[in-house]
Length: 130
Image (cartoon, rainbow, N blue to C red):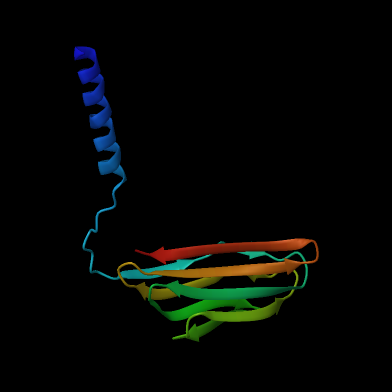
């Protein structure tokens, strides 16, 4: 009987620790996150269509997007999210998208590109937020 009480205590203690360690506490963070972020840069090996995207989740704004177009950097100010643009990038040119914005507590911003080669898609994405 004594041995069963010890086992019960250990089991209850273990469950308590699991529940406490897995519970998510609200940090009460009310400070927005300033985001200055971007994707990895790749170089095209053919003339290809590239789809650039910017989105948000649970709010957030982007004040500027910079992406690499056929003739270099293109800047879009205060885009409406979700935002999307498709451009044809010549062979040997870089592909990349960056942004500056603000994510509120609980919100996030996301950037991505997708390069459509005939034998498949190469994509990259990144995010910033709380």
